[in-house]
View 1: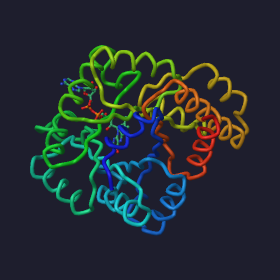
View 2: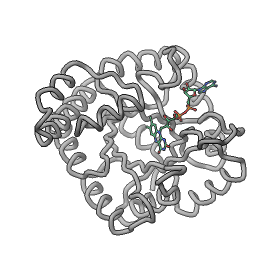
View 3: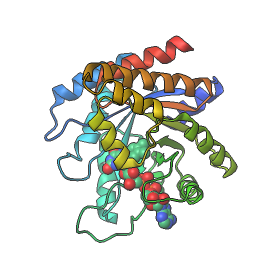
Length: 289
Ligand code: FAD
């Protein structure tokens, strides 16, 4: 296996963007067959890497992240990034998480704050920047989240950049963005990162919208702006879910192709565990190159 930082460096010297996918572990006890099915649908597309989300509580199974990443690496030869959140963590729980990552042969970790579990007091791991040095010291290649439209809790765009700079300075060597539906936000954000001397490569996170409910949920959760072409598509296909899904995937493909043409470092598709989405996006990008 190799580090994601190395993959970004290789892609930069070849003047191309990396292509990566995000998946989430199947809910509940890990069903290895389901995990293999998702992985088996994505690995043949030869992404540079696949990242696997982490769920600290609720319905999620936090141990499944490393299991799924290990399956992808060992059975499919795909470089993986395991996500890890730190809100509410203690030094001991982070040490245990690090041991588990090592035991699964994981080299790349996306360090996140996550959401504070209800009713718990903040610990020494208040922000992702508090987790990053621990992971770097433990020998991982560490990435962090970036927010082209600002994080939902941080209204001021300049402060948002300062917080991102702190994560890069703490040792994050690559960044993956929150979803956005208007590439102009990303281009302006990239300029601000350059001005702030944030040099880490940035992969653009793109999520196709599949239904009105999904897009409403995403917009409220992360505060992404909805451009008018999307609002028009939602209105046009209000009673036609299949056409709306197709329009959402096509919209994402167009975003990805435009980003690629603008020389971004990485294209990161939120696949929502749908290999057909990953395939359609990959084909659109490769056809346009
Ligand atoms: P941080 O960088 O710590 O920022 C959190 C907030 O604190 C921001 O508003 C920031 O501006 C503010 N802040 C940062 N530093 C300071 C400071 N020094 N002083 C004051 N304020 C500060 N969640 C999961 O639970 N599991 C996942 O697998 C997962 N994967 C994700 C992948 C990506 C690419 C992205 C973009 C998000 C993901 N999330 C995931 C969601 C993420 O956990 C939330 O967005 C969370 O609210 C913030 O995480 P962070 O790591 O960006 O936090």
